[in-house]
Length: 339
Length: 219
Image 1 (cartoon, rainbow over the protein chains, first blue to last red):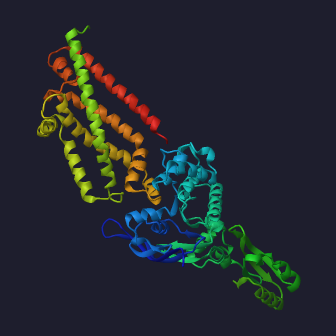
Image 2 (spheres, chains in turn purple, brown):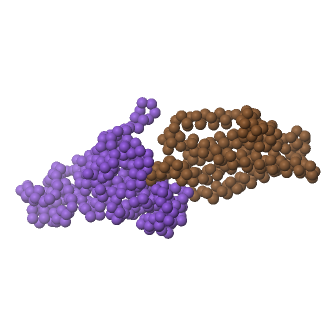
Image 3 (cartoon, rainbow over the protein chains, first blue to last red):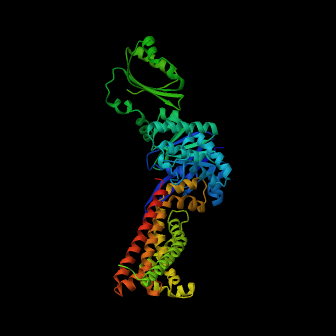
């Protein structure tokens, strides 16, 4: 059984008059224990509403969210409060208490949970150590950088040892370097504490850097869902393709339609270990064809998986070309003759 | 200009009366005005204690109270004053209309400062399992502390100015002294001294208020 089961989740917002906005339409998905699950979408796609339904900051119009076997709609006010302590949340705007110090902000979570002063003191220093902010304990949020504020947010969210961390665009207002350091921290904490992380973002980079699986959302629908490596390597939905294009511009989609080919235009998709095969070398040496490389890129997913595409114009003797293509089919790679 | 001994005694009594009326009504105003302001915020649509009817009723009562000019308000609440204090004249009696008028004023100022607390901060507290009570005590009020301090400062100054009208029901005080002796009896010396005293009062309160606001501001 999945840790989080979302079934038929629908959220409709009433606007003035008869107008309505369908933020979520019949969303179904499962989130497994221990994974980092990413949701990507443009603003207005419904991803924020989605994550807020997971801890019931938003009450769905219909559908169910079952977390760890418990249907959230069946929880009373008090039960919901207890349940929420099992699920930390971090935000794009950090949402720290400006009147409290760093230590005070982290202590807030524990106060709310009714912990004793001595417990709070001990736990706060543990948490600040965990996020690397021990020296900032007495600083106020206004004195911190964005990255430091988010670290406080993370410490606060994890204070009561939740099993799940929800990240609502937590890195969207941070610069790329700080984003990476916050993502690395989330991943590290996930591994150390055995968390399940659900994060929403509009940046593909965030997804490729730490997510195991990704759901692509558009107009309240999940339009594509799968392991990041697969979705990123071989995007199917136009929206997904756009997100992938944002990472590296696609020769195939923009240039191929006009390109005058000498031989055969092939696109090869590499995933995983196959990137170590000396493909181009073999094509020249063994099959006597001329590969003219038009585009090549390699992306690293989660620091240890690679995916790449290579677009080549293969020219030469038709018989040789045929043999080269047969050789390529024998390898464990996805390739497509575009022209 | 030398004030006679009699005038000095009058002045001293008046100052004490003003201090008495203003301090006690400030205390009562804060005690009731702030919670009323909190209610005005949390009963709003989408807030932590959404209640359309209560929000509407509070708004109507507050606006109605605020729309009555203070001298008329003093007379208007005389039955209530008599019920609470036992008499409708004197410094203590004036505290009733002063406090009532200032409560609604304070409630609006409180409302404004609480609305400045970003809702995201409240949601963060909710996501941590905070109760509504905890959100009010540990989030809304502390976060709005600079704004609330400002609200109390403005309220005290308004109370000083309102208390000048206390004379209508024999409440006394510096403002009343200025009207009765300085204006109606053409005693310019009294007028001059009372104006200076009121000016110093207001100035001192504003300076202290501003200092506290600066101290409480962490942004």
